[in-house]
Amino acid sequence: MRITDVCAFYSPHGGGVKTYIGQKLKIAPQLGHDLTVIAPADRFETIEYGPRARIVTLPSPRLPVDRKYWYFGEEAALHAAIDAARPDFLEASSPWRSASMVANWPGAAPRALVMHADPLSAYAYRWFEPLVPRKAIDRGFEPFWDHLRRLGQSFDRVVCANRELRDRLIDGGVPGCALHPLGVEEGIFSPANRDPELRARLLELCGLGEHAVLLIGVGRLSAEKRWPLVIEAAAAAGLVSPIGLILLGEGNQRARILRQIAGNPHVRLLSPERDRTRFAALLASADALVHGCEAETFCLAAAEARASGVPVIVPDRGGAADHADGGAGLTYRANDAHALAASIELMAAAPISPPPRAPFTMRDHFTALFADYGALCEGGRKAT
Image (tube, rainbow, N blue to C red; front, side, top):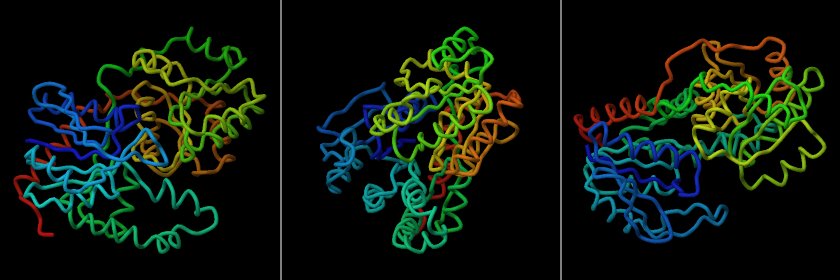
C-alpha cells in the first residue's frame, strides 16, 4: 500500500508523536508499504528516510500557544500534497481541523482518523470534572461530540490506542472505532538493563540510601501530566517509607514544578535522556514508574516500563491504566493525590514483580494496523 499520514502533531523538536513517526518511517517499508508523512512546518521540504519513506512539510502558521508546533492553514495546499502522494490509504492524526480537511479530500482512498489526542480528557474533563459530573460535561461539549460523530461518518476507521477511549467514543455514537495499542521500540527495553549501581546513584541524588524505594516519572512538563500531584503524593508517602522520585522531562511547567520541589531533597527533576540505551537503563533501574495523567491516549512511558520489568502506578482512566493489567502494577483514582500516595505506600510495603512476557513492539502494532487498512482497501470506501 501507499500510505499517507497527514500528521498535524508532528514536530522535529520532540514528543511522543515524533517517536511514533520515526518508528513508522522505519517499519512501514520493512512491511512492504510506501509511507508519506505530510506535516506542517515553516517551509516546504521533502526529507527522504529511504526509498519508500519520507516526510513532506508544508509552509504553515505556528501554533500561538506552543511555538514548537504548527497547524495546516490552507486546505487546498494540503489536498494538493495528498494528490501528489497518490495514497491507497489516507490517515489523519488529529481530531481537529486537519481531520476535516482530510475528510473533505475528494479522492477515493479509504481513510482512518488516528486519535493521537483525547481533547475531552486533556481539557474538558480535567478542567470541570471536579465540579461537574462527566455526563453534564459531555452535554456542555455536545458540539465537539457532534464533530467527532461527523468525523466517524467520514472516515472508515477511528483508531484508538487504549480501551477507555475506544469504549467512550463508541458509547458517544462515534462509528468505526477499533483498538490498536501501540508498542515499544524493538531491542531497547528489557529487565536485563537494570543496574544496581545506577539505582544507588539515583537514590543518592535524592539523599537516600539503597533501602529506599526509587520512583521514576517520565513525560512532558505540562499541566495535563499532573506532576504537582505526583510530587505531592510521593512526599506524603515519604512520611511513611523512604521514597525517592526522579522526574525526567521538559516543558512550560518547569518553573512551577521546581517551586513545588524546593526544599524537598528526595525529589529531583532532570532533563530528558535522549540516548535510548541510557534511558532504558534508567527506567529498568527504578522500582516503579509513577504517572499522573489520565488523558494519555496510550502512555508510551508506562509501556516501556512494563517491557523493562518495572511495575507501574498509574491513574485508573486513560491509556496508562491498560499497562497495569495482569499484575503489572497498581491503579489509583485519577486526580486524587491521597489515592496515589496510598498506592505508593502499598508498593513500598509489598513490591510488585510484574510477570515476564514478551514485549508488544511497534512492529507488532504496525503489522496489525496495516493489516486492518489492507482489509479496508479491499472492502472499498463506505458511503459518507
